Structure formats: C-alpha cells, structure tokens
Length: 285
Image (cartoon, rainbow, N blue to C red):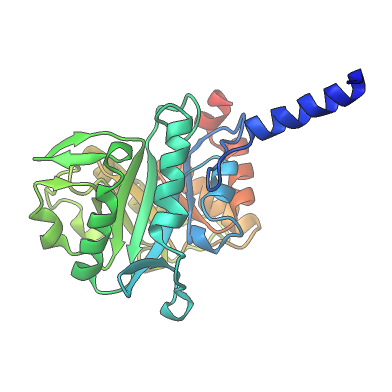
C-alpha cells in the first residue's frame, strides 16, 4: 500500500475513533465557566444547553409542561412538542457531559451547574413527574436527604408552579425550591430554598437610564445581603435585555450588589460583559 494511501486511511480511522456516540455532547475546550451567567428560556436557542455551555453559562432555564405523560419543554403549551422533553434536552446530555468530564459540567470546574425547571402546568402533578424523571439521574444531581445536602454536578431548582408543601414533605429531594423576595426573613433553610428569584419591574422602577436612584440601589444591596446571610442565591427576571448602555448599567449594578445569577436571552452579550466587568471572572481568565 502506498504511503499516501496509508496516511489517509489512518487519518479516517482517527476521526471515527474520536467521534462521539450518537446523542453525546462534546465538551467545549478552554471555555471559562461564568459563575453569574443564567440563560433565560434556554430552550429557545438553536441548540438548547449546548449554545449556553459553549459560552460558559453555569445556569439554564427550562419551562416544562406535563402533556400525555411527557415533560415537554416550551414557553407556551401550543409549542410543547412530543419528544422535546426535559430528559432529552437537558438531563441526558448533562449526564453524558458530566461523565465525560469526570463528574463536572466543565473540565476541572468545581462548581455545580444550575438547571432551573419552571413548571408551567399543574404544580403537584408536574412536580411528581419531574421527581420521577430525576430519579434516573441520581448520581448527577445535588440531593437533600433529611435536610443534609449531597452535592452533585447539577443542582435542579423548581420555579413557576412550585408545590411547596409536596416538596417540604419529601425526606429525599433531588430539587431545591425557588423562593421569592417575600420569603426573605422567613427562616426557610437554604437546604430547601437555595435560590430566591423575583421580577425586577415589581421591585424597582429604574430601567438603566440615568443614574440608579440611591434608595433603589440601597434596597438592592439590602436584598442581596439578607439573602446571602441566609445562604440563598439571588436572581431577578424581567431585567432590561436589549443590547445597549441601559442594559449594561443594570448589569453593572447587579454585579456590584453581588446578585448571583444575571438573567439574559443574549448569551454572547452577557459573556462579553462578564469577562470585561466581573473582577472574579477576570481573575479566573
């Protein structure tokens, strides 16, 4: 066999061996995980989960509807299609990714990746189906057993129609509860409620134009300080998300106050902002 022909065959063999099995998700090389980056309505991107992960996001959001026994992922019920499920879009790919990376969503990253599951259909029935789906992926997930946390590569948090009493009644949970600002000061342990989220426009009038009012800035800092003292992370939805100085101004205030998850649909825009403005990311970069 000629040397050139042998070289081609060896090259082709290398490609075949290196190719992932069907459904596997390759880990992006050299992507810096961004601790504050949250992909709102992640499933609306061309490649759910993969687009966010390629940009270093460490939190994604999936809206779910229980339809004909399937946990279908969509913002509106009319768009909930068969086969496009929480398992197929998120749980199975995350399990494959963590397996490939030795138990982490990013290579050599010690953090826990947040999967925020926003229940759109009936809370108790949908949560029961979510809990059942999570059982298959126990080794992947953070679990709470008798109030004690066993940390995993992925932390699931339930938002939307949250069946609080059903979740409190569980001795073993594979998902945390997404609280609201009204829950601050309630004494709910962070082992049940690791996250507190709320609508920005219901709590602040400032939309990034001009200076943030002093009273609102002080309120934001008080909220974050109180949440962190109780062990909760903080997220706001409905913050300005049109590219421009107003959005950047709001993001800077969130960053300065120590808000844990910054919400966006613009993956590239938030990545660029955090790498340029978050001191913690600049130190890691």
